[in-house]
Image 1 (spheres, rainbow, N blue to C red):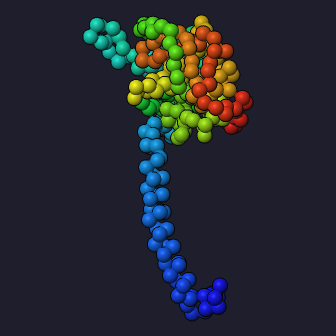
Image 2 (cartoon, rainbow, N blue to C red; image 1 turned 90 degrees about the vertical axis):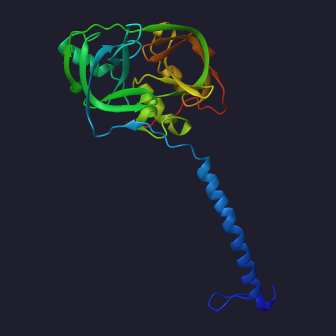
Image 3 (cartoon, rainbow, N blue to C red; image 1 turned 60 degrees about the vertical axis):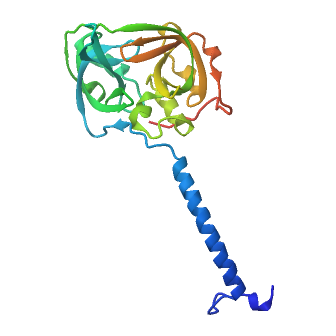
Length: 272
């Protein structure tokens, strides 16, 4: 380097060759950084509008059913054929737990609740046409129980082969963002391990559908799904719809096909 181009910080000005180089470098770098910033923003996914009404308790009344999973079926009135329509509100407990334990404790005091009109207090979770109620106070979420008559509408879909991702509905429909994909893998595994019913998210032809996942004959399955949570998989089984929720009963767990590579056989689990 020529002596006149050597620059020391305490000198009043930099040599002209160095000034020219830095000026060109800055003016070339600025548009590159702007293009990179805009591209990064455009690449991001749209903001998810799922809602968790944390800190706000709501009171919900509906018919309790344990099948296919614990839900309150809220009557919406009759359709054109005169059949009662329901909004099925999936029940979960506070934390990473399903609602069955708390419901059994309520039954120990108030008797069998299946098919009865049950009023519960909790925190609402909702997104994309699906609603959940977190029983924030566990068994103390109980308000009252009355007689009722449950008449769910069941429609047989038949054998299906679906591609999608298994997620836990509590986080996916509002509690966490993101509530799906590998960033959420360990949390989803912990929620499902605690008895929160697994949901299979299926995207096809530009639409999204959701299936509650059960084993053959309607058996509840949790640990059996750990190795494929948050991955693209193919599930084959018998499907049917109960009111506004679809269900898939997997014929043979060994036939589940992983569509992505690099799955973790034992996903780490976050704590409560």
